[in-house]
Length: 306
Image (cartoon, rainbow, N blue to C red; front, side):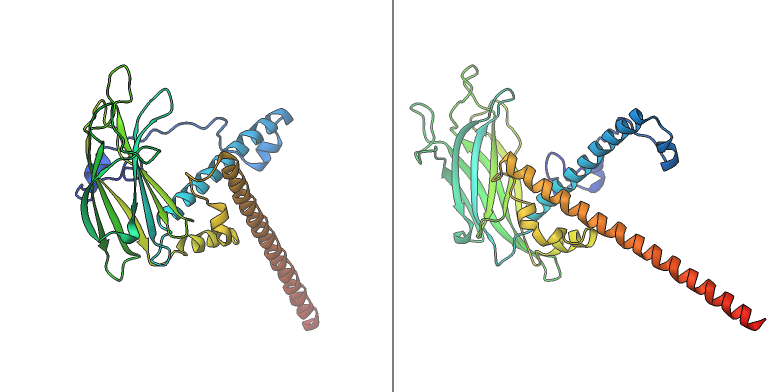
């Protein structure tokens, strides 16, 4: 939890330090109780339906959690050297708690053309490709560091792009009352095929037009992109065969398409579950028949002996 909520901890921080910052709250789930089949069937029909409805809510929540986790994993650890990270879109926004965030400026970096180590200060552009700036002010700039880190051959990762968002300067004010901004940076990495899209975000710096972040983000490149599909197939046969359609990019998917992907995910899990239950039933029936045949054979041998 300490490494996966809010932001990625620095590699220099010890695990014990990360643990001290984690607070876990455990809540009771409505209608949660230890139950049995006999106890459930003895309940009045109204209570059985009530518990059935809450059980479906719970199962639906678990299904969505599993789907979301698999979706995040695919787009973070699905990029290989054959389908490498090709483009990095960086956009600066002004954070608003009560309305949509205000766009400040953006820049696009072609990672396939970048050197393995570079530091640069780039002029941010508006939606029309012009320099982003306040009225009569200098152009807004973003300073970042970029380098590619290679890993040992025994690692599951070939390497990773490390992007450090250092600072921004001369950002235009988007808050008309305070004449300032609450800036943060969004990083969107896109693979060569466009099938993989990985989004990360910096912290928000309050009321600052020249913010400093010094936050580093990684874009992993893996040796084998089939680990997720293999793991999904091991838990639910057939689930890993269609990861591309079941796990679309977060930022390139509308609500309707996401709901359709989740529904298809649930349908495949339900189908695998039915097949598993049928296989268990067939196995149990086969064992019972084998046991019955063995008993009959033993009885026949005993009668012959007599």
